[in-house]
Length: 124
Length: 273
Image (cartoon, rainbow over all chains, first blue to last red; front, side, top):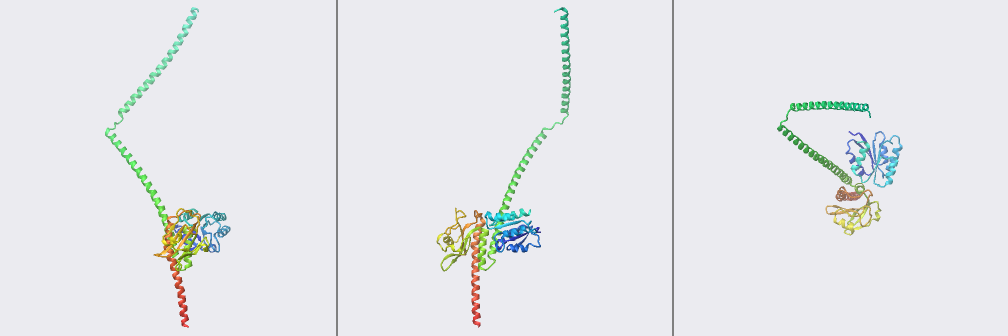
């Protein structure tokens, strides 16, 4: 029985499937997918989301903008956000953390790292 | 000294002697009492000893044997405990290895699934690019296909570097051409992963369907956090070598057949009129 709901925001279907496939190994998780920031914001209302995993480089609305909007909205500001990005540079990581992201995962994603971060944040 | 003084002196000495005598007498009495108490204690102990049961020698030997046996059992249990501890450690390590293998298989499954999820050539190329970025961790690379008429490789897509900058490569010439002709994935040895060279790449993955070479993935630079290649990376090289080739070849065939079908249909329409 899923206890937590996780929203995966990633424009690349390959990458999204990779993350979703990894997260499916956590039985307590129900996974919702979104292809960019705008799609994510459409899927947020009306359901309790416990964690957001978002890519940074996305069309229409990037991950940093999404983090900024989530953290400025009283309804969503408590949701922990994890940033996933190709960039290993400290600049993006610092921007994301400064905006309120809880953690940062660099691509190429290592499944064990991803699962460790998710489990730690959700207390599993 | 008068006679009277001598008498007085003698009397005093006599009194002193009397006091000393009384002290000695008291001390002697105390000693005699202590002696009596000790004799009584000795007698009591002798009686206790005579009453206490005597353990037979055989039983003592048996008990000694039992102690030795228990000691041996304790030693064996300690050794077994150590063995179990070691087994636990081995199982924990094995669990981690299996976990890693599961992760790798999941990644390979996703890569393979995505490669064969479409027959659209552009989408297939995009998926190959995403796999190389997201699963291998390449920063600068190109997907090159074989121009069968000219016999050289040209870039159809690139990441982190302008496609126009990537030179055409003759089969069999230079590192890329030789590796492409040889047909086996190649990784440069002893090069820093951040090095960038158009003629001396870090990785070349030839794409083949059986003996038919169709192109190569050429990686010039890796992401800064990618420090070395794992076993999964080598599995991915092999997967891309085969599955990407099939997916690209199938999508090209499909595109061509669609185009030909359109031409034939148009021609038939023309004949009808």
